[in-house]
Length: 142
Image 1: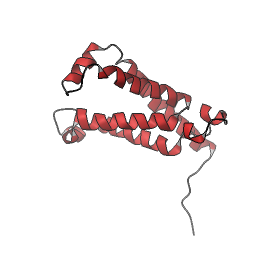
Image 2: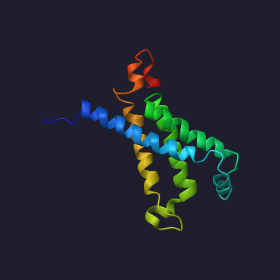
Image 3: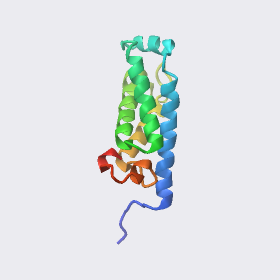
C-alpha cells in the first residue's frame, strides 16, 4: 500500500528557501516603506489604532522579513508575520471584502501571505538555511 510522505530532497529544500526569500523580501519592502511614513500613521488612526503603533508594525514586518531571508529564527518570524496578516485581514480589510465584495480591495494577497507564513512555521527554514548551518543553535531557534 502506498503511503503519503513528504519529500525531503534538494528540490523541496530549495522550494522552502525560495518561499522564505519571497515572503521575507515582501515584508522587508512593506515594512521599510512604513518607517517614518506619516501617511501610514494617519491611515492607521482611521481604524482606531494609535499612530505610534506604526513603528511597531514597521519593525514587525521588516525584522522578521530579514530573518526569513537569512533563515534564522524562521518559525518565530513566520509566526509574527502570520499574526500581522491575520490582523490585516480582520482589522483593515474586514471579512466582507473577500474577493472585492466590500468597499476595500479583497484580501486574497493577505490570505496567501498568511498561508505561506503558516507553511514556514510548519516546515521551518529547511536544510539550506543559516540556522541549519549553525548546528549549535537549538532547533526551536531555527
